[in-house]
Structures are given as structure tokens and as C-alpha cells.
Amino acid sequence: MTSIFEGKVLIDLSHPIGSQSPQWPYFPQPEITRAHGLAKSGVLTQFFKMPMHCGTHADSPRHVIETEFDGRRARYTHEMELESYCGKAVCLDLSHLPQWSLIKAEDMDAAVEAIDGLEFADLKDMIVIIYTGMCKLWDDSKQYYHYATGVGASVGHWCMKHDIKALGVDQQALDHPLHTSIGEKSAGRLSMNLEGYSGYPLKKEFIEKFGEAEYAHFDRDMYKEIHGEAAYKELYGMVEEKGLSNGTWEPCHKLLLGNGKVGWENVGGQVEKVKGRRFDIVGAPLNLYCGDGSMTRLMAVIDADKVVDCPDRLYPYGDH
Image (tube, rainbow, N blue to C red; front, side, top):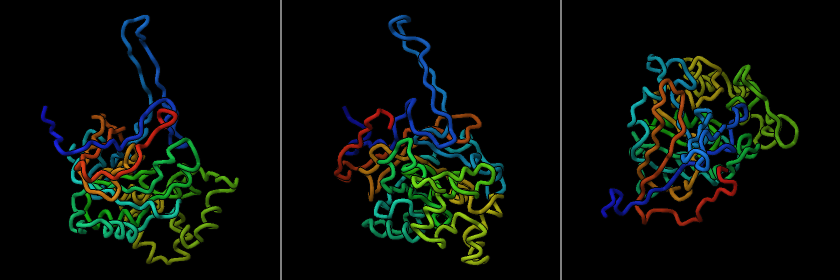
């Protein structure tokens, strides 16, 4: 039988989903219940209840903004073109960066230059997956959610500069955790100001490890004080002007989705097998009417001889 994937391999880039799947710190746990069982009913019928942002999922513009940067009402999942979720792709290997680092444009540039034959001009309309290795820590843990390596405004502007089609990350969000409600105050009343393993707020731990100048990326007033008003406007001004929010609150989300591009969070599965490689990708969402996101079965289609030789990723607890 001839396969449509002759000479290719399908690589699953998705975490399995179950009732114990790790969830964003303020999301409820998934519920999976059985309405009919084979012993009594002769059929198996199950129900599930979970956030649209469960496991490996794609965010839609409406998730973080009211209006896209071109002035249109921010789109829901059902309004996005299917073409937005598939195409030529590359996986940039950033696993050498220290855990909890804020990834910058220069890190992205170096990762592109490390791939033979990949030119910056090739990035236009390409899907970019960022591999940091955080996916291996997928669990209901501070290690995964609080201490994730992540992106921010610098990478958001990089995505716009190269006009990529979409972005996927193998960590908890399309922004560094301290750019999200996990942090001290950038999310306003949603801010949880969570504690780290030391028992102190994450702000204190981050400053001790990376310094105040780096932490300032997560604090508008501190950034202006240390780096200046002009530097703040250059990096975060568009987020404030177009995203209508504190510029340090999920800036990569807003720069990406505000420009009508989708993004996957919690990329996982066997993603290590495509790090540093080019391939095709498909990660379509459910056709959820007025959805702000959707779980996806993200997969890579890659030449068999291009797959990275590494052990299969196993999930000892089934869904994590």
C-alpha cells in the first residue's frame, strides 16, 4: 500500500491529555467521566470538561486582545484560516540556555545560523518551534510553570521582523512566566505573585540569579528607571499602544496574536527528534465556535533520514 507520507515520518509534538494533565496554576483540573461502560451498556461513552488551553494547544487572538493591530475585532478560533496552523517549519534549538532565561532576538538569530542551509529570508511564512528542553519537565510543578525558560517582547518583535507564520514553544506559555500572572504585578489584579522554592516571591529569586537589569523586563517602572523611557517605548511601546495594556504583560502573546499569527504552547511529545531540523507541520485546532484557543494534535512530517537520533519521550504517569 502506498503511503502519502512515502519517505517521511510523522512525529507527535503533543503531550497526552488525561484527568491528571498539568494545568496553568489558576485553571481547574480536567474532568473525564464515563456515562456508559461496556459491562453494563455494551458501549463506552465518556465526557470531558477542561479549559481550551489544556495540554498542547493553540492560542487565538481573542485570548489576549480585543482588537488586532490592523484594527479588526480580534478573531476567535473558528474565524482563523486552517492554513494558519500548517506549513513549512523549523525547530530552533535553545536548550543550551540557562533555565529561566528570558530568550532574546539574538538567541533566535544564533539558533537560525546554527542550522545548515537555513537563511533568514527563509523564515517568512514559516512556522517556528522553540525547543528549550522544558517539555521534559512537563508536570504539575513549580519547576515547569514558575521556572520555565521563556520568550518576551524581543522575540515577539523578531517574529514580526521576519514575518513568520506562527510560533510554538515547548514551555508553559508564549511568554516567560514572569511576564504572566505568575509574576508580581504586570497582569494587574490577575497577578498571583507566586512564591518559589525558597519560600520568597519569584521576583527575589530571579534578581538574585540574573540581576535587576534583567528582571526589569517584567516591571514597567523598573525598566524605565534602569533602561530609560526611550528604550521602554522601543521594546514595549507597541504592546501598550496596540494591545492596550501594561507593556510587560504577555508582550510576545500580544505582538504575535495582535498581528494575526497563532501560537502553540506546551509543545511536547517527541519534539526533541526535530530540534535543529526543517520539516512540515500540522497543528489544527478543533472548530470551536467563539473559542479563545483549542487543544491540538501537533505533528511534524519530516524526512526519515533527518530525524534526530534520541530516546523516545516516555510519560511515566500516562498524561505527564
